Image (cartoon, rainbow, N blue to C red):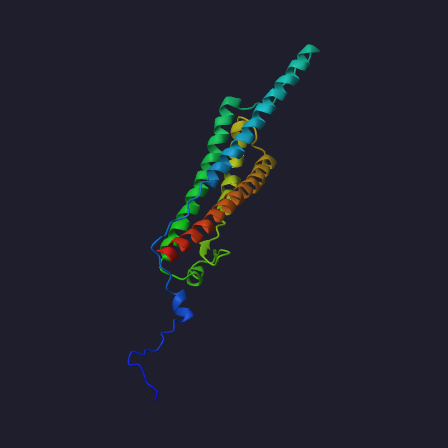
Length: 213
């Protein structure tokens, strides 16, 4: 005789689609980057060193000319002790602006995707991607775009200040715009790179903490 246990209950099957849409969001740390400031400070310091070297070179040429009875008339240049702080302030300020914009977008993405599965989160923004571990993060290009625009505007102004208003020719201004845009784009791309690496790290950290919650 075969006996049937009255406690028999069918096994509940969890569907994968339901699992994916149940992304616990207890831990939602927002990625914050300071890469722009660090990059700006580094480049500003290198630019300041260039001013010091140029000033030393001009003085050396003047001294050598005096020894042979000649006089060298150098182009008017802003005093190095004014040019150096100005250069540092501009580069660090640009970096801070880039950091602020990147961090603001990361905060918005984190808030807007709360409670979503990774694949759902990536559909909310064209810049959203998945980490190698399958967690959603915002892959920023804000630094590159902002840096290019800011550089194109600021570099000609710096050139004018450095030459005491003498760099007013069309070629000088166009050259400053192009060089500024390229330099700003490059610096912004560096800030984006490190900010994105941090965003990936934070996304994986959030997922790990949520899984253990």
